[in-house]
Image (cartoon, rainbow, N blue to C red):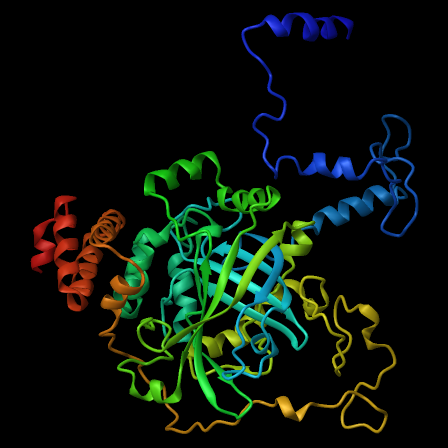
Amino acid sequence: MRNLVHYILIVLPFGSFTLGWNSTMDGASEQLLDYAKNQRIPQQAVSSSGILIDDIINSLSAGPRGPLLIEDSNFFNQMQAFNRERISSRIIFGKGGGASGYIEITQNLSRFSIAKIFSRSKIKYGVRARFSRMNADPGRPDTLRDLGSLAFKFYTEEGNWDLVAINFPVFYIRDPYKFYDLVHALRPNPATNLPDLNAQWNFFTQNPETIPLSLFLYSDYGIPRSFRNMNGYSSNTYSLINSKNNTFYARFYLISNQGLETITNEEAQTLAGTNPDYYISDLYNNIFAGNFPSWELQVHIATQRDAHSASFNIFDPTNLWPRRMFSVFNVGKIVLNKNPSNYFVDVENIAFNPANMVPGIQPTVDRILQSRLFAYNDAQMYRLGVNSNLLMANAPVLDVHNYERDGMNRYKGNQGGAVNYFINSFNGPVPSPHISILPYSAQGVIAKFKNSDQRQTFLSALFNDYNITSEEYIRIVGNLAANLNQVDPSLQMKAVQLYNSTYPRLGEMLATALVKAGLPLKYLLA
């Protein structure tokens, strides 16, 4: 040891290299150092039963080389806990990062909704957020070209409002029946367990409604610079109800105050190899450094008259709402200023559900939204159990009183001895009729209708509202061609026909790019 000290003190200062302590460490890398600063004295190890543990590195055995003993309960408890550490992963959006903070309401919009979060300015509410990519499983790089998610949970005095947005203003499909097949087409091949572009493009070419999202996917929007540089769009249409029971239709937007920035294919590939968790580390390190990311929450509002007079179906999530149509209002500013204290508790356990709508916000006939009202909660029950709303990240700020009882992982007193049925004569919880859903009429022939729609507004809105320049349009074609060049020529031909039938100029440019890349002309002439 003395020789080592002499080497450090004498030899290293004159050597050919220097060791810069912490020279490359960032906020995420320093987390354990910060913990040690705050935890000056080690705590005594205590079992999950609250009993002091005498030894946590040596197992109990019969002699130094003998067999282990079952009475070493601490060791076996630890192994059992280890075997059960992982819970079911999200089927999609499996890998992500998160943070918490607040929203400060900046405008009173009570003329549109009775929701208290919209009715008072200069008030703050707590927020938790999770960011992810649709097809990014744990272990996959963050910077793959993909659809992104921005999910926010607002803790209000009327309950939790969950706003689950994506970073494109449109969605892939308009009928939820296709969602199962969409996900399977985008996920790894069941035989090879590898991404299969033939499956993806087979699905796209069989479902023309995917065209709008595909143009965003293969634009610069497809690879954001970071989670902080993503905008969010509800894509679904909601109802807002005011105190006069007037109905308005709304889409919610989250506009990044960091600016909408993207990276090139080459940058994305480099990051995928050098820092596959780049988006997650970027979010953590910026918050650690005090560079708190923020978004402006906006609401795009249409009247019932607007809905009837629009040239497109405003409840179709594959359709854009052009910003020149209807009015856009600022709601408030979201600021994320706190990193997770524990990733599992704060991010993995959080459960978003579009059905969590406070009074004054209601669903519409948007088919994708209606399916999400069931699917999200069902997925969370499968992943976290029936009592997931009791977990810290999901619990509302107000006390819960209802008739739900028991189930796996039920804690927090299980509502004690309160009566567990309704109607009762023992002062059990009673309903609040004043916040009931506004009645609306629904009638029609019961059948399975093919839900097709024309979208004359899409391409102009793509250029005018989302700053797609002619140069980026060329990059879209290049990205499409590079991707399609990896699939069967028959699917390349179908893709050209698909885009040509909707946007002839795009189809011509794509055909030219594919022929230059090696697609035989016979496929285009077939």
